[in-house]
Amino acid sequence: MVEKNKNENGFYEVFEVFSKRSHTSPMQYQFSLLAPNLEMAFILAQENFMRREPVVDLWVVKRSDVRKMTEAERNMLDRIDNKTYRLTKGYGYLRKKWRDYEQRMFDEKEIFSWGETGDDKRKKCTGSKEK
Image (cartoon, rainbow, N blue to C red):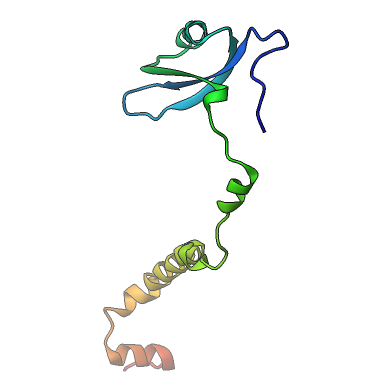
């Protein structure tokens, strides 16, 4: 489907504006604007955008020059359902399991039991006292 980018009398075209905030940041889509030509679109983009935020780079592209995917191409991007083994959502329970294990491992009883001998443990269990 061909999109009409000019208004009714054919004077204005739609342009898409992209900007980059720093040298290491990626380009980001900002907005669309109407302009008679590319040079005027660039000037309008500078006026509207660069006074609001710091910008390192600015791209202005005609909307008609941007190729969109067709519906058939979008359908080809759907993931194949037999690859669930690649998803890591099955390991979500491990954090809780480790937390429970660590809390159970170092409770007070456990720590005190390290200093006891075998005879002391038996006496505690039976409740007998040595005389």
